Image 1 (cartoon, rainbow, N blue to C red):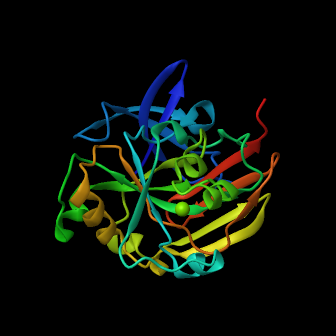
Image 2 (cartoon, helix red, strand yellow):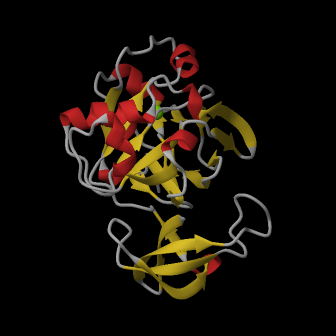
Length: 267
Ligand code: MG
């Protein structure tokens, strides 16, 4: 099931996205949302009330208490920035205020001259959990969505902590929805791409991750409790590169969908 969060007539709701877009993958025409009674983190029912997806505004599919992101989890990406691969998963935070939804604008930060896209598979946590053993990871994952770990690369290189480089407002686009029908095995072998203005920039497979999803959840929850709606960004394949105001960046993950955002200057 594809679970979206959206607003319509000033109300916010979750819904199950149904149908196939007539214009092909990435399109929204012909899709409908069946409004969910309640929230998707518990048992829920579909209301049967269906609204065309074109008539709603998609929001970030979750409002995470925290986004835990993993650095250098693809060898080719670590190499392109001249970095070693860490022996254990290497986590950092992106704040809740960095999250934006599909179609929202990435606002170029005032302090940077070099902002990069990083296409990533995002894991959405479905239940409160800590110290999760490897064999229970499948029970705490609600599903998967697309993410863009937008990074002020120049700031990342001059500041030891990445709070500003990777935590500025609008630096964490998520969406377009949560795909709950993908199991851990399937999630471990999905095509992931980034395009800028339609031009292919990143193309990898989640199977290239150095530390797989299970290891990331084990490692993170050794240290902290994850709450329903928390998000793990699993690292980016090679091909990161600059974004400029006016650009349109799209992250597509096989079996999930396409997350598209425009880059704008600060007004
Ligand atoms: Mg990243």
